[in-house]
Image (tube, rainbow, N blue to C red):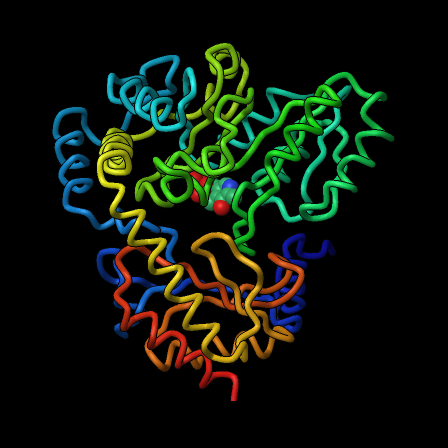
Length: 389
Ligand SMILES: *Cc1c(COP(=O)(O)O)cnc(C)c1O
């Protein structure tokens, strides 16, 4: 008799349940916005990456409809075969203009952008130095590349330097990879220090601007602009799916870099081009980011207001240090954070529990949007305080 080769799946799931790590989806039933219908209940939405409130914007919707009518639903092939449209080029120009780089390349998701770029840039003879809290796509891109991967302590420049001193000379190329806004913490990487170490040790830098694009910097270009590092040679990655309200990802940088990736990034070459609807929506979003700085101003006013409401709560709320619209309330353990998320939901607040293995310690993750009203923020803080007692 043979044993069922799939039986281990049930065992594995029950282990996940026992650890309280089990996850499932929740249905959102209307357009994205500050207030959404979640499993039949109206809730104030603090769970969205739609920082500027563009995912439900009429102009993006209209652009997607027009592009679909003109080009159809699918792009029908990879970009190098039948999948390239004028819209893709327009979007890549617009991203390069926003990021103040020579060129940009659009991937079908941010995850694919990171995986493809890293695998193209480094290989077996090379070294990747990575912040320990990097996004899953940077981590898996690093593994896929076959390079030696060494994590450095989160934002710790002494440790990064130490690793460079001890290991850099054993490898051909070196790539330092980091989130710019850390997605599950809300703090920023010390970009100027990273760049100066990279220069000293002849290393490339890839910075993941997923949560910074459209959010940080005077013109919304991201963390690189925020830190005044726009002129520095750099590999910038970002997504079209967060503040830009669409789907897809990008790499921005020198014309040579982009030309190289078009020839060497497997997750760009061997996948279907971004759909006309997503491309057109993202293009409209980039234009809005550039033309309507008031949206970014509103976002940061909301962030400041929420931070000051939290401070007025006499610091009863244990918030992780943040320099972004992502604020995390620390919770002692998995049970507490799940209870807290449930209580918040009962009070009409949608703010997810983030727990291991995604992060080392449990937390409620709050994302502020430009379209939140002051009353939404007030209700959030009172509900958080009530959840603590
Ligand atoms: C969301 C995210 C990505 C992936 O982007 P998608 O377009 O959603 O695939 C990559 N890096 C970071 C830091 C992210 O938060």
